[in-house]
Image: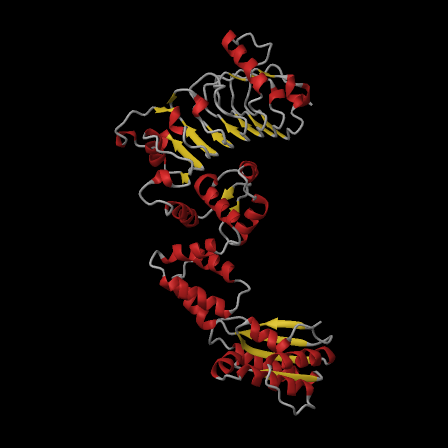
Length: 468
């Protein structure tokens, strides 16, 4: 086992002088020693440059050979055998490729007590990359992650590719990191997060995205390693604004002037127009629409939408419809929905026409619903609501639901029929000021790990499992 010291730094600060000084101080303390400088220049300037360097190194650590070889692999074998038998001190200056390193040191290891000092020669290409990024910290950080553990030839290839691009330099650097993601899963995950999940709890996001056949366990790690994603102090997914814009730019390239042909729609005005014109097709995987985010005077149309606008979106899995008024039967909604957010839902109860069999997350905060679904002891339920509950029980429409959020539903009075939510893991019911009852059937939710009933001040009946 050898101690290996690598000296890094920009050009001109004295790395070579320091290497020579250290070599002069300690070379006599070892059985053999060798100092080889200008490695890259000598390799590039002479057809047999690498063989010449191997010969120099081998002769200095072996001392008894006068035979010259003309094959890199033969020298490599002899060098690594010599290094394994002798305690040596080596200084290799201006190493720029892994091939150079492998040819000069081999792979068998070193004699105990040996020491190796390396001075990588990345200065010129490093300066070029810094200049290209115009000193932008984010671009440098992302680029650095992409180039980590790569040789100079790879760095030079990157700068050549970047210089050919005509778009924003910062965007080009960020896109290079995106293009370097190891698999399509990570790229799809990145685009999903950039469009819909920035600021959302990591565990909630993982639950929804896993249900969309996205591998988040390795994917999120890969994105964090590439500096494309970070996790906040409150476990939320965080993404620099420029990185998020780059991710959305990638989606926008799918169709520059026809948003309904893209896989994801996050711009609220575009989403509204696509739904109003009923142009959405099977290519759309996710759509977000919040009517509060639209300057309605610009729409020039009725604000109401029809449910059959979704009839051709067979593959839609992520849907946000906040404060949206819709007319028609919800049976036209896509059957593949995994995550549904409907803040400000105007009706008093959920329509049982809504396909919910594949839903894993449902967020109906700030809605007008009065029960979800009411308890048998609740006298406020009318015949229609009780009949709806019976249909729900028969059809088991919420059998996949893991996350339910009903916060700030001021009219919500009761929560029950939890046997219809066998996979529920998280129940969030904050600030429901009229909530008086949570039924005992919640004990049927054996996977329930998180309950938030904060600021529900009128609760009169709580299950024993919650009181404990």
